[in-house]
Amino acid sequence: MSWEPSARELERRAVRRSLHRRGLLIAGAITTVVAIGLYLLITTSAGWPSFKEAFLNGYHARKSFHAVLKGFWINVKMFLIAEPLILVVGISVAIIRNTVTPWLTPVRILAVIYTDVFRGLPTLLVVSITCLGLPALNLTGVPTDLVVLGIFGLVLCYGAYVAEVVRAGIDSIHPSQIASADALGLSRAQATRYVVLPQALRRVAPPLLNDFVSLQKDTCLVAGVGVFETLLAATDYGNYHFNFTPFVVSGALFLMLTIPLARLTDYFGKRALLRERGR
Amino acid sequence: MRLRPVALAVVPFVLLAATACSPKEDKAAEPSTCAVDKLPLKTAGQLTIGTDSPAYDPYFSDDDPTNGKGYESAVAYAVAKQLGFKNSEVKWVKVPFNNSYAPGPKKFDFDINQISYSADRAKTVNFSDGYYFASQALLVLNKNKPAVASIADLKDLKLGAQTGTTSLTVIRDEIKPTHDPVVYTTTNVAKRALLNGQVDGIVADLPTALYISAVEIPHSSIVGQFPSTTGTPEHFGLVSEKGSGLTGCLNKAIAALKKDGTLAALEKQWLSDTLSIPVLK
Image (cartoon, rainbow over all chains, first blue to last red; front, side):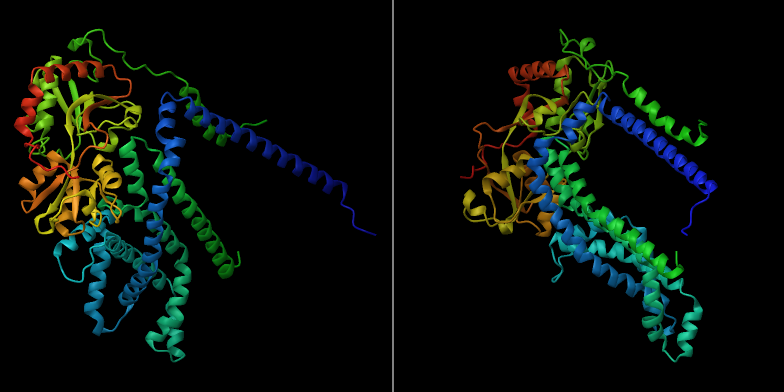
């Protein structure tokens, strides 16, 4: 004989269903009211027609799209090149700061100065100095290409941030791990390479991805020194035609890139939690 | 049904929506006469004039628009006088170029900042009639000065100009160089890049180019000025809010200043002689 739910269980289910329905009803109604309210708020505002004309102009969106997209490609190239370099700089500096041997003291001091200085300076300022100041030195071998110099500036700043994130990851590894590695006969360098770093990097992956989302947007900073990337392309079009629509176009391009990465970050974070703590 | 206290979080949105429908005052209409007390001004009895900061020579002097020195500062005070304002009733505000055309109310009665008229731009702001007709010129360091000066010879140069200017249009549409033009946010950055060798030359309006070569970068010189494609050189206009009632009176003032020779005299006083510069073919 198959199991039949009791009358009481059926009653419980009915109550649960009705509560759920009521919840859905309230959520749907209140969300609709707020959405309509916000829509009305924006579209009935006195400046809406002129806002629409200046920021959501289809004609200017189409006309500027090519230049904005071409500029955006420069942004994409910049962070694709900058990201691996930043990882290398960040991890190296973090490892150096965590060494203990007295021989490396001068390098450790340099690493501390580096992170302190470049975390403390506004990125736009560093980019301006690397792009306009370095070539003014007139040194042979220093490139004058603004994209290269801009990437250099971004790597300097973000390298310092990432170094701190990685260092926090390294510090979060329990000393017993290093002691165990020692007991197994691993050298200090081997312990760092095979025991500490793999765990540390896995732990800081979400904040690192967060930094990289931020980097993607900060590639726009080179606009200030004349690299014709998407922000400057949009500004230029706007300045010439007196219309702001290209900014919206450029913003949409960025979101198409950063939102998937943000979702990916969340996914990795969840997966890490699941693996490490089973929830 | 019990209303939970947490539902109150929605109230601000609903209130906002309700207040959104409140009307806003209309723009002042064209006054019947151009008497000071009839003009649609931001602040009654005071003429508020906007310009970018820094204010560059030779249009301004010492980055101080209030001193009446430099062509545009002098023109602004002449227009103010023509409208019936005393010098002390003129107030200057700093308006970055890309804020000057932002939609919505503006904080200036008019903006004077070497803004060239174009039909596209006139859809967003009001332009007065021109107070100066500028052509564009190419500036290079002396050591890089090309021997032959025809537009076709300039194709292989790496050129730069300030964003949003007709200088940039000249590079894109007339020179059509093999390298994409380098776009600078300000003239200062463009000058730095020229000195650094990051560009071979920069295009600017002729008075600016003349000033740079005469004062700021003495070892630079002008290759030539560009002929106008449209037949008439671009004109600089005073920019006001779209639909501003002031533009008609500004036009009357400019017409009067043209007629009595004030504009020509100011041009002679503040802008170098541009006729001696060869026209590129």
